[in-house]
Length: 411
Image (cartoon, rainbow, N blue to C red; front, side):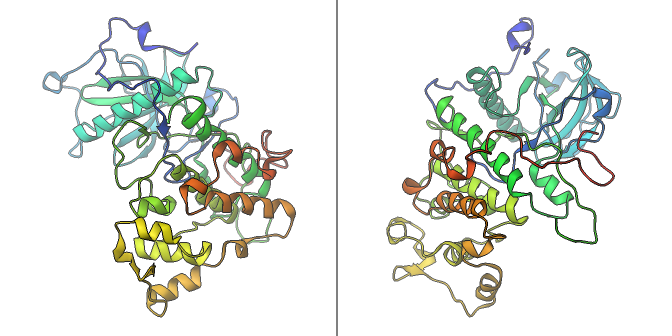
């Protein structure tokens, strides 16, 4: 049974901002954030299996940083100083560090109130802006738990959360590698078409349900090659999710997955997530990023090289007229940047690895997701009915085998 904050009536929790029940949640997929699920295994086999997953749990007591215990210390960057064997809240025994980021650290822990289960604990830096961001993420995760109590829609499960001497902490189910990190560890060898199909269906289902239904917005190589044991995934990291009624910042999502309406500051909503998913599916299929750039003008030039001209309506409406001249992208193809785009980008269909029908169906799906005009972009509810998913979207990808090499995903 899922543990509820209300099971600990004596524990005080930091207040979270209210969320109107009718609000929709904008997910803002900023990179390949889905994570591979672990197969059901004994906790003793969970060592070193995951990478950078987050975690949340219930507050046992609220501590003011001015009354911190002498044994609780932070480093100069604001990270909580802790090590293997330390126990937080007389409950969470730290096993090892899974990852570190700007926000804080993620630790693998044994939860002694969950029968010794291994969980992932996200410990936020004792820095106010990161603590506030964590409160917003908790708000989103609580809404997801409320709308999807049986966890049917493939979003990471938040178990609990608490404030530990000024550090917001969140405990999550323990997952395996992110789909991006598996790709990276596998020398950027792409996933098979069957694996892409299975992961794509799950991502579309998860994001669609959070934005609508839940009312929350072998090639021969002389190197080791791995294959995922399971392509079941969870969507994680809701730190930048935004409700409909909330302020929409000008810039959202990581550069490479950023939709044209965001770059052109035309306003954005759910369709920007569909664009991001299209970029992610391309990356699964090819093993590299579709738009590898850090500059807006170059990004637009890449879009035109791959997808065709930016629509004139979008050019007329944007405030970013500095990128255009006489209704066309102001771009010098003879420059070094122009040469880079020519040599590294080509029309989308020329990236096909096979002429088989299922490969063309995937690219038809990606093209529909990478439609410039948000109003014309494929809706996620319709994506689930796409021919690419017929007969193979819901079940596990066929032909999956255990990882080859020295490391198994379940260890």
